[in-house]
Length: 80
Image (cartoon, rainbow, N blue to C red):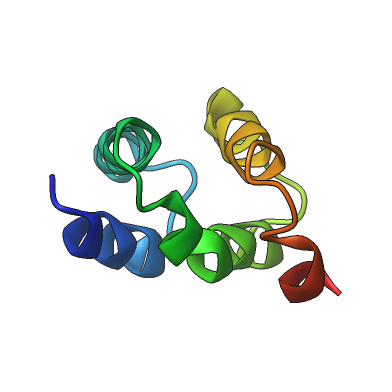
């Protein structure tokens, strides 16, 4: 999956209980993690937490958190 497509999946993610959407999110996260474009997805990644503050995406949201933390200095200003 190309980085632009992965970002679209993040932006379109609307149901943290939908198995199909969770599979797509997992594929998008994997594509971003293995590529070098995760810094382009910081804002879309953070908005998932805004849209689903009380959900963990069956563990996938922890993956997002670890991805963000692995980018030194890339997410802090967007988070504030």
